[in-house]
Length: 150
Image 1 (tube, one colour):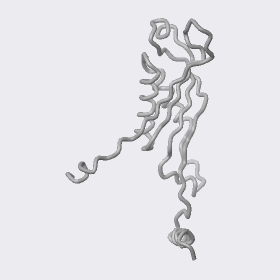
Image 2 (cartoon, one colour):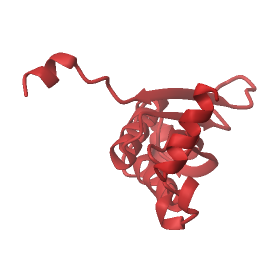
Image 3 (cartoon, one colour):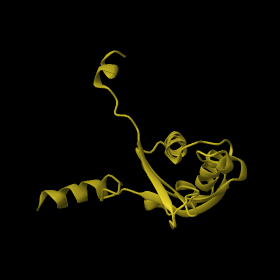
Image 4 (spheres, one colour):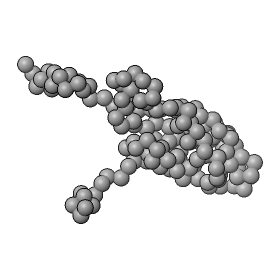
């Protein structure tokens, strides 16, 4: 009997999941009217920004239980993004995307969040369909020295 099969049987006998499972949640195309940008006009008049967000879900029990309460509420994720995007103005999409990533890491304990912010109608003198910024926010690695000092 192979090592992988023994590991599978051991996990099954222990009542666990025999597979290594990772879950990512992705929201695409969340469109919000915001007031972000370098120019005063962008901050005063505002514009639509579209958000795509992807993040890992540590220990997602729903893969085993099929219970809604064991997974992520997509509406809550959308609300977190919307609040971060509308409660204040940022000059750069980079900062806005970073704030969204930090909030999702804090709320869900995930290791990484990828946020893409797109201006479909950028205020530029040239014909450009859209401009986007994509920011990857990752939980910092714990310093082994910090663990030794506790």
